[in-house]
Length: 417
Image 1 (spheres, rainbow, N blue to C red):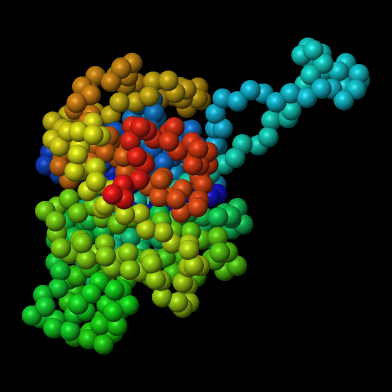
Image 2 (image 1 turned 90 degrees about the vertical axis):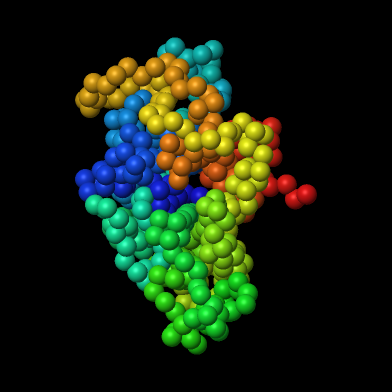
């Protein structure tokens, strides 16, 4: 994949919501907890791991100011939203001089050998539009506190406009990642349908059956109710991206992530996941339909159920972290350029001062958001599904994935038995 585009909500946000002045209440006590670098985590989120494992680069490093500055290049699509892929430590390729004149022309050569010209590094264009508080369905407007919940469609519209502006600079196979929906069902408590009010509801979770019902019985549809509108909107957004890619439809790929049902087993979330799986497995034909095999489902719901069944096997605690846990930054990263001085901050400790058992809690002090440890496991499963789908990203392939993944001795996929 040459390009990676992320759409989503809190789980994937690298600062898009936190940096807006109207959204600063998220940092107040009792609000949705955001760390000092803009992530809804005690450190990195799963997209940060995806970037690091696929390129060798890190968006979260040094301190909070450096992290915010570096992340800014990847929160909107520009010609600077590009990451070089570090191939790792490999010995230099050498070849003999072709003739004596060449050797004389290169004083200080190494015993008649020269280095091959350094090729341009492989690059991945990366942009992350995910914003905390994003909802998928658009059939009802919601507000909360000082900040309003935004819609996923707004992220896609921004992307298409910025992609159009770049023109031919943006080309090649593009992976679009869509992961949102929990705000629909948890934050704004979108309920499931009441069969006493909608007697003609389908008895199955087949997407086509629900689409037929919505057209045949519009009087039974209620604004802000049910899982089907959110899944139908996901389909509409994917088809909008494909339709806006004339001549490059075959280069548009999609990974759609379903929702971990960690909130008391809400039936409406299970229905959403089932409808999403039905849509991906049998995409309706028509204008804008993605090419066959270009949309894959990441069953994060099953993966997190698997992890949650035996958290100790993943070195996790089912507890929430105490308040005040700050991110730990990699101190081995290069300093900021001299021409761009960094505001003075407290020295970054060489070792993480937070005890390991606290870092390995399941959620932050806000029990609605996972810790960095859990984000790493979600990233692990996403990458395993990506590779299983036949794709590669940067330096990530079937050989390197186990080496990059945390707890590599444990399976990368859900056991079938």
